[in-house]
Image (cartoon, rainbow, N blue to C red; front, side, top):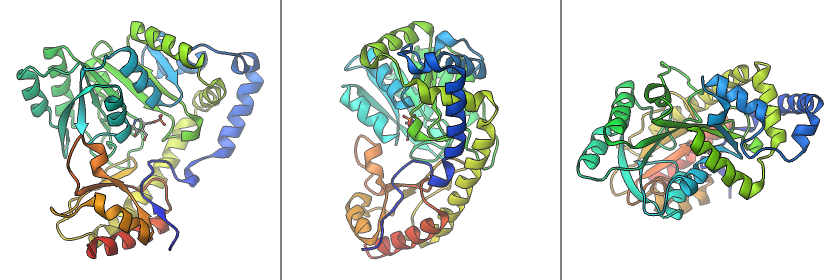
Length: 360
Ligand SMILES: Cc1ncc(COP(=O)(O)O)c(C=O)c1O
């Protein structure tokens, strides 16, 4: 069997991980602040990074909690801010772990269909009008995982207006927004709706390195306090050493050049994958994204990406079956991550995939 090429992992390629940068910044952090970094810290995260993030987002540090990856902040919110049985609005499709965690925490899920320009806000409005008002709507605004889409400015505004009308929270999760290949950067939902309507989370996993496990959430101070208590009860304090290294990267102005470098690596990979799209079966629908890590494919009706996954694996290529990103159905969809493999591997992987689908 050929070596398996994985389009399944939404992780940066090895070339994107700058070990030298992290080593230098870790050393500098330890030299500057060894006692704080090496002691038990505060549940909310390494204070200088909290301050830096607060300034970066035009807010105050009491509104920032740093967690061991941003997924953990989302899980704390499910546990401490929501209760089992609460209605949570999730894009359909959405990030599979966000869906899984909502299900594991007993949430009732309002699936909001996705369109080419982001979630169908009219469908959400109709649900609200019929009495199904979510407590929180979770959205991934830019280069969505898994659909690759970006929500338009008009819809960002409409979503905020709806949240105000029906008094629900929006959680904007934006780990990919900085990785834009082309097109115009839009104002965040957080900027449009403000901090009393929108919570914002992001991560250094995609722009720097996922192994650092540094993500954060911006929320009102009372929610941050509740979540910090939850963090403190769970692990006392998040790992301060990687947070301090991230702080050094940010404070020295080294994040932006790294983002530019990673963005270029990802753009080349997006192009390599787009070049393989003609190998997919006739009738396959895919709009290559303007940034981020993912390409989303809808195979012709009747084809099942779930059923074909073991066949693809046997042929040496794997992907995420799109059905994992929905509460039900959509077996003809799949997510291809171009982020973690080389352009050469992408070319070979797309050829293998084309043969698997052609033989189905
Ligand atoms: C939309 C989204 N949110 C959160 C995460 C998790 O990020 P972290 O590594 O910071 O936990 C991911 C990772 O794939 C993601 O795609």
